[in-house]
Image (tube, rainbow, N blue to C red; front, side, top):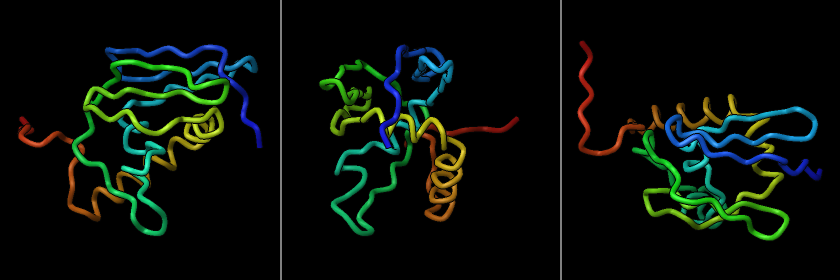
Length: 127
């Protein structure tokens, strides 16, 4: 399936969301954390099988830059230094249309691993 190409790509820095708008009127707001933990890079996905690496401590990650790769993808330059992997139009549309399922999967894997979305060294106090 060929996903539509966004007609609008806008980074909302304060909210840490990437907005993708389409000619159909569809709009997706993708949290940068979600994009970072589901990066299509080998560093995150691994090299096949069960070699994917759970990304932890990415709650406050943002973007430094966005560049277009040809007519088929975006390269996202995250402020934690990660910038490998190309987010194709198909993959971005998949993330947008199934965002809730991806979040559930991510949070479940974090819980199973006893890991945290919070960056290392940050103590969260409940009052």
